[in-house]
Structure formats: C-alpha cells, structure tokens
Image (cartoon, rainbow, N blue to C red; front, side, top):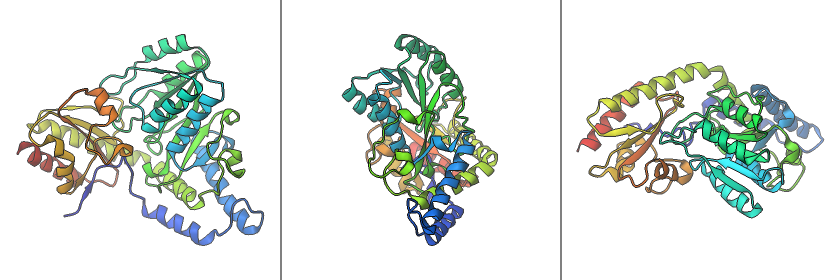
Length: 376
C-alpha cells in the first residue's frame, strides 16, 4: 500500500526539476562566491541572478533581499533587530504565532525591556482589525507588529494589505511570516507599512535549509550570525549556492504553475471538508470558511474512544497528518495553538495539508480510513 502524505504544511516534496538544478550547480560550481577568480565569479553570478529573480517576484530591489537558512533564522533576525536597535519600544503580536516568532519575541524582548502586546484572535485564528487599530493608537510610532500571513496550523489568511495600511497610518511597521504563502500568492512588498517578510524554500517544493528575508530598510537590522561580509554584512558564512539555486528553481516552477496548483488545492480541500461533513462523526472545522489557505484543513474531532491515538492510527493506515506545527512534533500533546483555540478540550485537532501532487483517490481513501477509525 502506497503511503498518503498529507503534511505538506510541515514540508513539501522536492520536485525532480529542483533536484536536477541543484545537482548541476553542485557539479558545475566549485568556487567560493567571495573569491575573485573565475570560479568564484561564476558562483557569485548564480547568487546574484537568484537574488534578482526573487526581488523581481516580490517587486523590490536586490539590496533588500537576503538569503538565510530559512524563515526561523529570518524571523529571529527581524525580532532581535527590532528589540535591540532601540527603534521599537513595543511589539504587537498574537498568542498563536509560529514558534520562531513567539519564542523569539519572548526571548529578545525580555532582554531589551520591549513591551509585548497580544491580540485576541478568534477560534479560527482571525485577527480583529479594530482591536489592532486600538493597540496601534495606544502604542505609538515606535511599534512593530509581527503576524503570520497564512497561519501554518489553521490556514487562516491575514488581510495583509489592511494590516500594513493600519501600521502605516499610525507610524508602526509590520513584519509578516509568509512561509506558507510564497509560491501560492502574489506578495507585493511595496505596500506602505510592510517592513519585512520571511520565507523558506521547503514549503514550496524546494530544498530544506535555505530561505530568505526581505527588509525594506536593512540599515536598522543587526546580524545574528557574525563572520565574513557575506550578504552585505548581514549574515556571515559561505553562501549555500546549491540551496539558493534549488529555491529559485522551485519558485520559478510555482510561479509558472500557480493558478493550476491553487485550483487543485481548493478541489482537494473542499472534497475533504465536504467528505468529513458527510461522515457521522462529531467534528468542527478550525480552518475558517472564508479567507483560508486551501493547502490546509484543520479539523477538531470530539472526544471518543481512542481519539488521543488518531494521528498514530492514521499513520499505521499509511496516512501522514499532524496535530500542529512541525516544530512541535515528537509529542502527542496539543500544540500551543490548539490549546489557545480549544482550552481544556478532550477531543483531537488534526491538520491535513495538501499539495498539487496529491490525488482525489488519496482523499477518498483518507475519508474511508477516518470513518473506519472513528466509528469503531
């Protein structure tokens, strides 16, 4: 029996074309991009051409794009810079942010005496823009707002432009983790109020260990990796040329095929959602009905026999799903987000997350297995 992988919010399959590009880069590029000889110039050319493509995709300049090991590093760099630069005295965020934001804010802000304010999203992770505006009014201009664009567990989409415009109106700056959005949505970083975004290649069928950071004003950022002058003194260490080339190839493929992929994701999402509704199993959807990322469907199943072993039983049946962020894996206890939206619940929230590579038949089998497990 072939396994069914429905955990694409955690990581995605690296496409064959991406692997081929990375292998060619590994074979053809032997030089250090910081060297001035021909081999070094070739390596530098690949990096800067990649930076140019990414900047054009985001509608910005190459001077505002930095390559990192992934969004966790990018988020840490932004939060650390915000806390230590003296530019920001307040940070507004939510209690359901990704750990790389939530934990960074708790760590860096406690050391720099930066005050943190938490919004109160609803049970579907939706932010109240009126509440955000009230906080911005009271916090003043020396404020950063840090929120997920597409929520990695719930699939909720933040109204990015509206939030950025509110930040601009009150002199604040918005940092958005766009990890789940890149490759599926057109992100325009030129909108007023948007300060920075982060992304990771492995969320859009690229390799792990490579990502990027966009900074509207890099002059106020402080590196967290000190060493050489790579990435214009923003990140020491020899660049991951193979990873960068693979990330850009994956982005090119996703951009060229974006609408087709989105259509497929909506189809799979809606098929599973309607299929679960047709089962005689008590449940609620944590993913909202509107303004959601079609890649994700988060479902709460009410308490019943063996509900605590649902993820394991699905795995035994050949279906890979998760109960939350991959950064919290290795434990069956509820994620911080699940505990926030459903405190003291005795049921189980499951995140199904799709790829354009999944099939209708896989959704049919998933529904059959769910029925088998939960009706026993």
